[in-house]
Image (cartoon, rainbow, N blue to C red; front, side, top):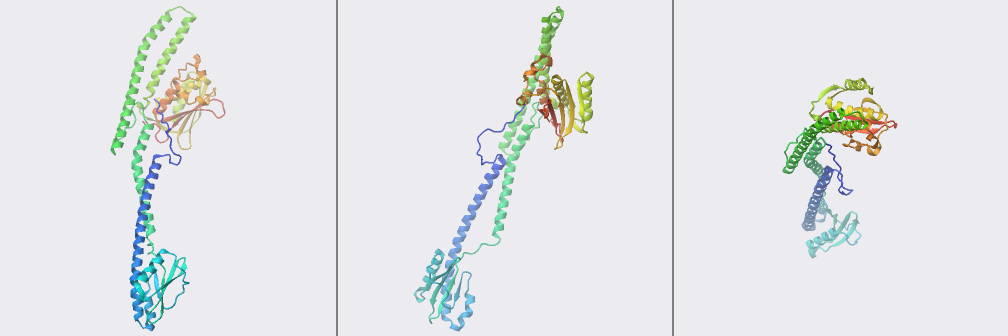
Length: 451
């Protein structure tokens, strides 16, 4: 029984990633990043407002104290107090300053000048002028009681960000990434397990059962998958029993008919009927063989010297007069189910001999270390459009309808099903030089006969 996993055909926007994991990464990380950005923006805005309010309040209170103190000090003592009265955003100058008396541009500068004017009151009239606009800087001019000019040089700015803040932000982003990765892995791991189990699904019921644990939804999905495996296995066993019963019931009347025809006199019609009965018997046997091929995994795996195994198979064909040559050797010890593998290769060799008269066996290793067994012939090959269809049960290309070949359309299907049951892969392709067909059996290098 072949299980085909087709890619989804539902519409999916091109901008979305193709995998569930990538989509979850995108959604979770984007959502967390957006929430983090909004939280930081609101926090920064609240901090800016609080710092601005504190700046306005401090300059309003500080200017009143400083101006009154300087006004009561003797002129010679005033310069030594200026460094003590200096603040981060403003300082005091004894003199007319350097402003050009242009109107203030920034909102913060206008608010600060108004607060200074309100705090000093009518006793100290002020005038304001801009020094620079980038960065914003202005001067407040006034006169003390003795007529001495006093200037307040102001450069408004909110408290700068701490140097460690970028490191905190980077750490938070890394934490978001880690949490997103953990969440996605926890969500995706059961799906990956289901996908692997589905790919390794054994119609005979020998597949690995998944542990029914984890969240309720995951446990329900795993339980449904295990139940599906059981139903498929039960269906396969029922199919085998039905075919066995049909074969048993057909063998008796076919045998009686064969005996009756043997008792008849020689005639062309008798020979044709005997030939038809022989084909019926062959078809029944092939049907039973196909049903049993789903249970190839029931054979215990053994370690096999591949060279010796293939040489023995080739010699068996040579002994019965068939042209089979083992042309390319490769030292390899593999673990497989030898009887199932022998049946696969025998079907492939029989197919090659029927349509090409001879076959070659070769073994090698591909780039990833998997063992490749090749069955090559120099026959007519198979049209490219039908290479996949010939692996289906009872499918025969037009040239295979010749009675002399004895084909039932099950040989390659049996080989395909047995190959899957021993954890291998079968591929058919026309030879690159156009001289025939090449059948390749891929045996996994790590555990080629997993059940």
